[in-house]
Amino acid sequence: MGLFPLIDLPSLAAEGQTARPLFREVGWDFKTNRPLWRGGEPVYCTGAQAVLVWAWLALQTELRMHDVFTRDYGLGIRSELMGKPFTQSVQHAEAIRYVKEALMINPYITDVTAVEVSFHGSELTVECTIKTVYGEVALSAERSTVTAARPVNPTPPDPCNHEEMTAEEIARMWAEIMGQTEPADEEE
Image (tube, rainbow, N blue to C red; front, side, top):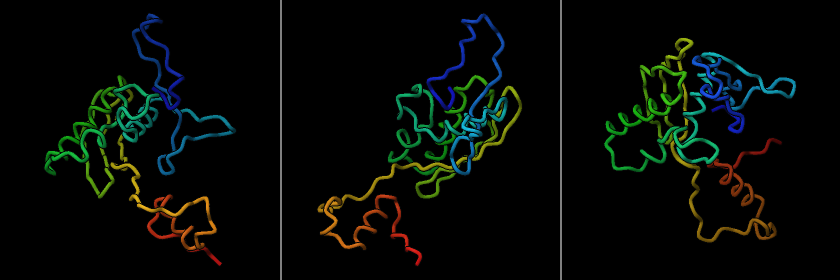
């Protein structure tokens, strides 16, 4: 499955082929978490780099959260692991198992080794070596393990009636909406 789920690779069985076609995926900028574009068109990568992009995106996607993906695509950390009464060692072992299971559904991946996971607050860091049909690639990914839940204010101010709110209250409200703890200071 590629970045664009409606564009799928042709079935090998339907074409009578025994060899897999060259794996192709939209290139990805891992630092900005955005696809690569050039001249208004997506930049494609192939081979081991394409498998690496697929694996990184699979680890960023919560298992069974989005209808556009198959039920096997993604990492079930949030739905299957977080909030459960597991000890830290069991949570660590299960996270490793979930990472391997999430990646091994890709037929171009032959093995996932040297899996290291660590939890830092609400962030999960994964580092591993992926053996593909094209060779080995190293993967390092971070993702949030919790949803962007906000504390519920029992009597929130009416955001549509700005006459009731001071500029400071509006700035604080928007900072909360954007996930910041303090409103950003405006430069003068």
